[in-house]
Image 1 (cartoon, rainbow, N blue to C red):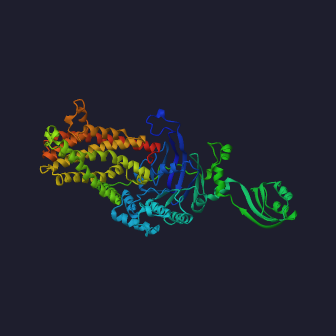
Image 2 (tube, rainbow, N blue to C red):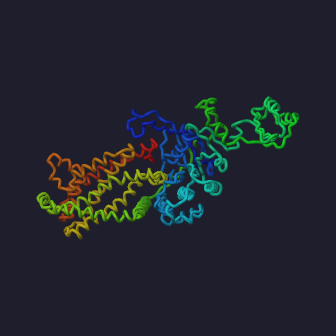
Image 3 (cartoon, helix red, strand yellow):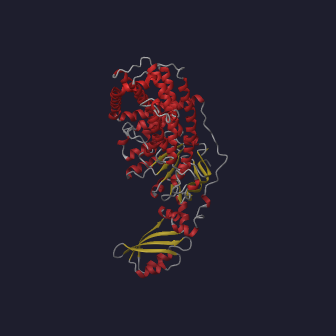
Length: 638
């Protein structure tokens, strides 16, 4: 039999209260077992329902199978790939949650889907074709070009389902997809989910709290409680197992209390309740021990006592009763927490070590093109988000004008006094400070953009949606910074042009080549610091001292508003530990004096050393932070 999902003793333990963000294990609280030795097999093309009370471990199990959380022990394979092969696992799965916030609200549905399609590696033409197919399949044609924040709850959930199907996923995980929908929208979505499994042959794992929903559409269900998978099976067999009783609903006319007492004393009667429906009509709810007695003695007793039987109906064990049986405290009292009742005949087979592993490789050129397309999709996303705030977009440029004008008038007041200290840069204070405030923006962007990418993605819910794609978090982080740096470069250009056109700064001798080299090295060095800052935030989930330290110290000692030479002799050596010092000194000489690349070699080499040291260090720190967050389950928590 072919399985889409197999797990063997899959276990996840989280640090206890107070443990998250604590780097030393000795300070952690008692561990919390979220998933406890789960062994499960889900067949290809099956619609499998996963049920259990809040805190049972359902969502954690799904996140383990989607590689968003690392297991403590055990093994699992999804669509033929081990969890350790995360990229290939994510290439074959889709995840749809019940939250409505995991999209970019100021972008259209089409823009959202095209962006996520690029993360799955689809080209522009492939994405366009796939989005068109899914819009027809899910009834999204009329709203696809509307902004997401104008969608109804039902349409938002359909768009989430479309996103989960962008890569034609073999396995689709649905985490309570109907919980926020009205009955009509929920019914339509269930029909769509059922068709995905029945018609298209996809494997669907549906996490739900709605017992009726599981009964309507699922082939099999699994019930989790306190981290353990208590039972799996089709609903019919579970009913047989839960209570070996025959149940009947009997409508009777003219039934006395004495007759009810006599019925309750009959051999084999487990329970009998009588409810008065009218003056002489009664409804009996009867339970008999299966196989030990028949219904005949009960009926004979009623007739002999003068009662008239109007109808008899056999009743099935409800799904609610099954749920109660496997999750209630009574089951623990009877069986004990470690050996709760199970179904040996339908327990999944052991994980097969010979499951096929068809790894998908790509050549270097293909990988480069794929990375380039993904980077462009991030730039397009961020550009559209930026211009969606039209007023803010244009007000930024007025802010630049006011800032430049303010320093121009400050320079008129103190410019002459500063001339002796500025001989190395041409002697003009306004030109000096203009370059300083313009290029200081690169450090500000580097220090904030990487951390903000993580924070905003966590708060919006978009980070998890991106991490379920084959795109790595490192790629997401770097690509998300491209627009910020590009837009900052445009701001810097506006600063300099305003200085030249409006305030008469002379940059006619600027060495553009040297300036570009310095700019690139500046961005690389500052990016290293920014990624370190994001790593700290990801691990500790609190204020970032790296950002504060570099931002404050660089403004004070980096030569932004005044040359380093005016600092006290004690502080000057500290300034040369900052990449900003070398960046501004070299940039001013390249732009204001036109110095050649050769004459700027000492500063360029210093910046290159900062970049060569900080970038590898930051990626090592970031890799550690990501792994730690996956172990603690805090990757998508802010």
